[in-house]
Amino acid sequence: MELGNMSYLTNRTVKEKYVLAKNPSTPIDVLRELAKDTTFAIRQQVAFNPNTPEDTLRYLENDNFNDVRAYVARNYNTPDDLLLKMAKDPAYEVKWSVAKNIKSSGKILVTLFEHEKNLKKTNRYIIRELYANVNCPIYIKSVIETLYGEWL
Image 1 (cartoon, one colour):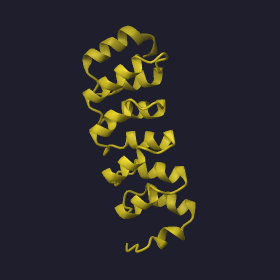
Image 2: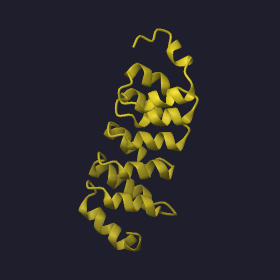
Image 3: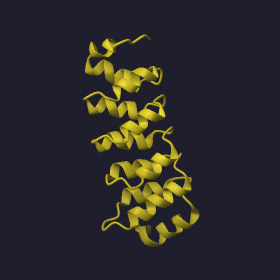
Image 4: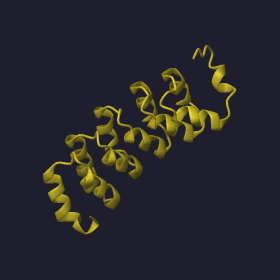
């Protein structure tokens, strides 16, 4: 698809852009442009698209909308260093998504757990997802069972 000055996207409806953002066959250059769209639902779909390149995931990780960042954290192609950073995001949706991502390593999950348990109010949904993640180290699961067993 030759885009030139991106007039291809400027003539599209929100629904058409949404479909493009969600489609794993959408070319990378189109996804990069859609990541800058003013409609957060389009950016959200770009964030979750398995074809979205790393540079675009990094760009979307700074989005003002929690749900866009959460979709970045759920994307299996999000690099470890970015997931590690997102494990300390102030938004519970983002941390929940890091916990749910099966590509989150033990190190990332430990960081998330340490961050979460040091908050004034620990989020039970994040703890449940941490516990359910196959990469969660056994010693963290043991601590979760001891401290938060009633949530499991």
